[in-house]
Amino acid sequence: MAQNIYDHPDFFAGYSRLPRQVRGLDGAPEWPAVRAMLPELTGRHVADLGCGFGWASRWMREQGAASVLGLDLSRTMIARAKDDTADPAVEYRIADLETLTLPGTAFDLVYSALAFHYVADFERLIRTVHAALVPGGSLVFTIEHPIFMAAAHPRWNLDEDGRRTWPVNGYSIEGERRTDWFVKGVVKYHRTLGTTLNTLITAGFDLRRVEEFAPTPTQVECMPELAEELERPMMLLVSAHKPRRDYHAP
Amino acid sequence: MAQNIYDHPDFFAGYSRLPRQVRGLDGAPEWPAVRAMLPELTGRHVADLGCGFGWASRWMREQGAASVLGLDLSRTMIARAKDDTADPAVEYRIADLETLTLPGTAFDLVYSALAFHYVADFERLIRTVHAALVPGGSLVFTIEHPIFMAAAHPRWNLDEDGRRTWPVNGYSIEGERRTDWFVKGVVKYHRTLGTTLNTLITAGFDLRRVEEFAPTPTQVECMPELAEELERPMMLLVSAHKPRRDYHAP
Image (cartoon, rainbow over all chains, first blue to last red; front, top):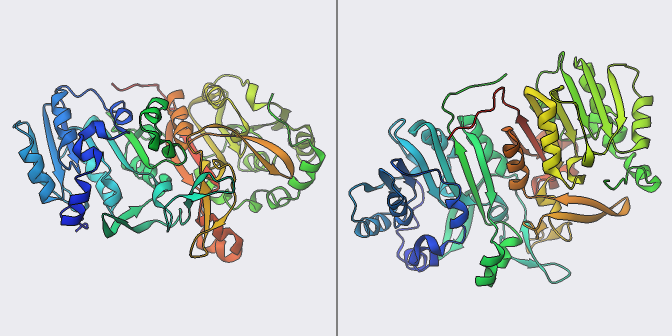
């Protein structure tokens, strides 16, 4: 079973005060870029893997999704998501992405925000998602960028000009990374960008879009602290597509 | 016109002593990984963009390619490639990738090693390559990895444990980077990984494989200095495919 930091009281107390948890999608600077990757939602069946408080699940229903299934490991977050949602077409369940099962060809869109980097067996997860999508369906997800996650000591340094640099090492050495984030020893799994993308391709996905989130000039003007995101990407945004017909060219 | 460092005597003197220039493909540690990405070559028509001394052009002909067209900006290198090749099916020409024109649907494979990062207008180049490939054809190329190229001062630092780290900054700020490599002020063009991949997708390519070169344990055993390539990738290897039929799913 995956580590469940979200139900730890200290973690939860800090986490639930993050702008993106208090303000929802508008508190997440990458949201406009993510939204631009999403397919038309009207009448579609959606799964939201790692749904947290259900901000995106509710938003997708408001955009016209026929149904949204929000899944999360955290009892506390699923309880709060249920409390905040009064719509029978949005369902929340506790589920571990590490051992996830989903009904076959049941969803038009699988969406996931900042959850897949907690999963050790990414290949299994992606095969499960592929099988759960209808042909023509989409997978749109965000993860921590491997540039952000690779290093033993992932924090800003200064170069000889006094400019911030982000240290990268161990990039090709995949696997567990432990960091302190509200609590000590939060476990994440580093994978190279190549591994992430090749896992999708091997599972049968077509890659549609790969974005390394950088704030727009307007965003930096409104929130000057976002300028550091121009120096190194913290988030990777991927849009992939399950072809209507599996075809393998020679 | 692109900067032509290769015909500068000081540059050429240093460059032509690199293991990969003296020993050819076997002097390039990424070659086994690149070779694994190449399609079947027998009877195929190949273009080699930035062919240098023609090592790969000759190898592809030896593997059974029907014809190989090697293009390079450097007169010195094209002259040497011609001297080293006695096969009328391998042709070399001087050409600038910045203003490249190629015949339409003429090639089964376009190959390029460590040349595209010298090109300012990558989009134009990729559209040219796409048009020059037959449906079902492949583009396989290597470039300097954007992690390697982004920073203002791209050189190793030591972290608090005395371990090497590679400084990344300016990652999202694309464009010219000047470095000193045998001569001062070698001009390269930094693009994010997202831009590189999305340019291919937008031009109509399917991505087949994205590799961030890391040496194998055997390679590190034979050449211990390669261990640093595990800390941060220096090269990006991409295999893309021009679908037999352009189809745009909704």
